[in-house]
Image 1 (cartoon, rainbow, N blue to C red):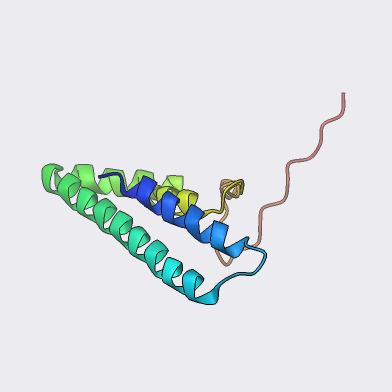
Image 2: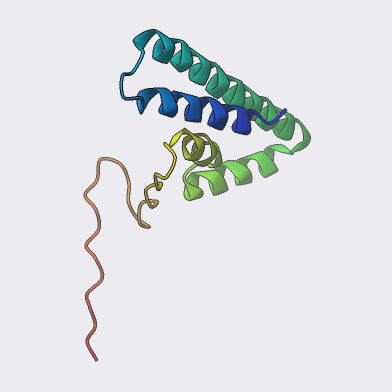
Length: 114
């Protein structure tokens, strides 16, 4: 089953209801539940996939994978939030190298003129 496609389908239904000239609160409330259910199924599938992966990796391989995911910003977050965006929305760019939450952004590189 393609849980990502299911979530996207439910999101589109919700967006259609929200875009109506006269939104029906009852239908929207019901559809929000459908969206949350679809997202939960996708998250569960992703978590179980990670667990299956963990079972076949050595401790060292698992630590390396966690390290790579940390540097990349977390694979699961990209999948989950990419599908959670409304149609036509563009995901934000990843933070620049050296950025850490709670710390100021590093200064931009100086412009070089030729």
